[in-house]
Image 1 (cartoon, one colour):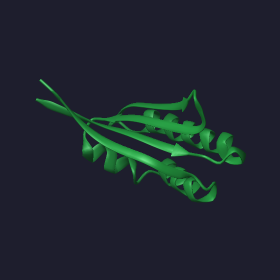
Image 2: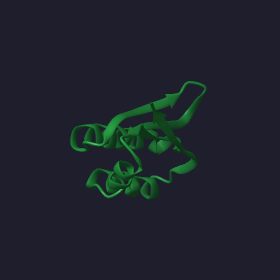
Image 3: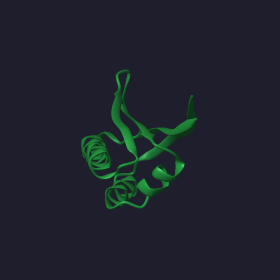
Length: 100
């Protein structure tokens, strides 16, 4: 049995920083998919009925791959943007998917 690890993270961005934060999210996604062997999927989503919300849907080969992601230069840039742009972390959920 193998497992994958999924993160669903929801953020609210002030209107004046929404586009800048969205770009940082896309950069983090692109670099994660290109540079991290353990990153299987990384979607950047915006909520249709809430124009300030960005949701990240990330899938990794396991918890260790996600922990490695948190130490990358592109994640450091993302973490700095959270502070710089006044981003509110609304909800971060962690899931394990067990594959037969």
